[in-house]
Image 1 (cartoon, protein in one colour):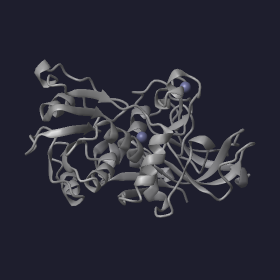
Image 2 (cartoon, rainbow, N blue to C red):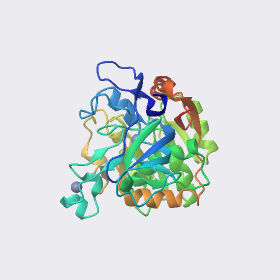
Image 3 (tube, rainbow, N blue to C red):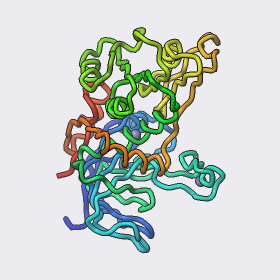
Image 4 (cartoon, protein in one colour):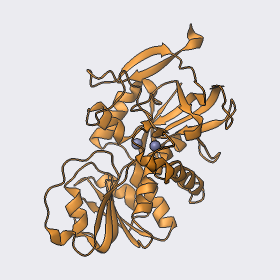
Amino acid sequence: MAGSTMHAMVFEGAKARLQLRQLARPVPGPGQVRLQVRACAVCRTDLHVIDRELPNAKRALIPGHEIVGVVDRLGDGVTRFEPGDRVGVPWLGWTCGQCRYCRRGQENLCPAAKFTGYTLDGGYAEYAIADERFCFPIDTGYDDAAAAPLLCAGLIGYRAYRLAGEKVACLGLYGFGAAAHILTQLAIHEGKRVFAFSRPGDRAAQQFALQLGAVWAGDSDATPPQALDAALIFAPAGELVPKALAHTVPGGSVVCGGIHMSDIPAFPYSLLWGERIVRSVANLTRADGTAFLALAPQVPVRTQVQLFPLAQANEALDCLRAGRLQGAAVLTMA
Ligand SMILES: [Zn+2]
Ligand SMILES: [Zn+2]
């Protein structure tokens, strides 16, 4: 039966560690493609799922929503892709197409949306299925592992970056992980000055930010040498919101890029006064994906990845939790 089974790392709910399982290969339904997964990046959202901070995870879930794979089987009616095409699968896996959000270009807010590696099985596996309408072709300039972090760290990071506004010259990035290392390159390419904030004392992350071209790097409770026009927060720590606001100019934005954050402490109204904006970013639209994946090779964005074999997904998640990664962890399939 070797030809019809696959290995997958499965979140079984009761256990905090993912379990290596042998499962039947999924069969693509109408409009779906099946991918032979080549690489799947590890995202902080995967930790929030495993820690049960997000309530709607599928039972016996295969996590992973930054998938790069090669189409190996087509469901009925597939027209966009052929066997052998290399595609990426992001977090947004399906939307209804009919609700008020879907109809006005906000499919990221569709209340019926399904999400890869959360309410749908994802890419911590040798095979995965995806709706062809939500897959993206992958630029040939990226190898499989290098492309994987573009699909969430890059894509949702890009949405956060764009929502910060057009007139940003000085950009603060709180939490210097996979998203920040990609956005630093994009922001510098667009002529912005990047100020990087890491966990207090994380000199390796600060050094990494400076290597990528940040003009300043420091602890998350430090005061940058210049006020920020906008700050993007990728660390799931609510106390960073008032800290970032305190360093942001009137009219500037603080954008929270994660799906989960600890409570935001009370803060004086004076930090918000002056038309400062605090907002979240939820998910992505396909238009975000198309725009970012066209832009990334022009910068060119170079991702830094640390590779782990599929069976070591737990170790990759441990490294992410402990802040022991530079760039992104990526699972690779044998
Ligand atoms: Zn993600
Ligand atoms: Zn909808």
